Amino acid sequence: MATTNIQDWDLFLPRILFGYQCGIQANTKYSPFMVLISHTPRLTINNNLRGLCDVFDEQENPKIVVEQMILKMQLITRVHKTLLDNVKQA
Image 1 (cartoon, helix red, strand yellow):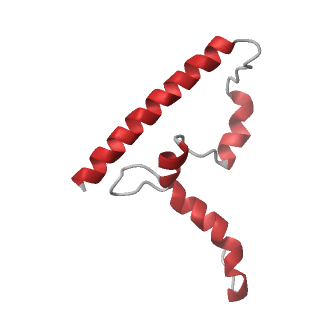
Image 2 (cartoon, helix red, strand yellow; image 1 turned 90 degrees about the vertical axis):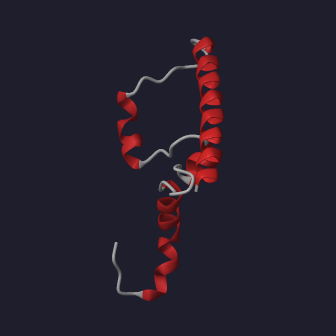
Image 3 (cartoon, rainbow, N blue to C red; image 1 turned 60 degrees about the vertical axis):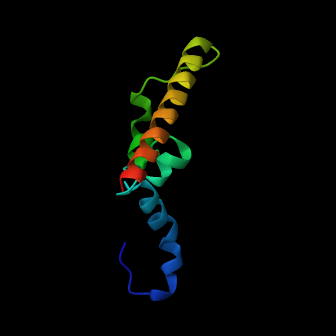
């Protein structure tokens, strides 16, 4: 949102910072958000579509939760390895 009042610039910092953190960096080929949090951020559109996605209840099937955690740990390992390779190449 453009504004002519330069006194409220600080109100826009959280959105600007979030945009930067979600952007893919040239050296790492990953966003800072992905490197630190190990997943892509949930955007407003993700929240609006949440009802269309399958959500697993850990009380119903803990095996699925464990499998998802293992997959996430494997993803984190691959991301960090690729990240280090990309930084070395840069």
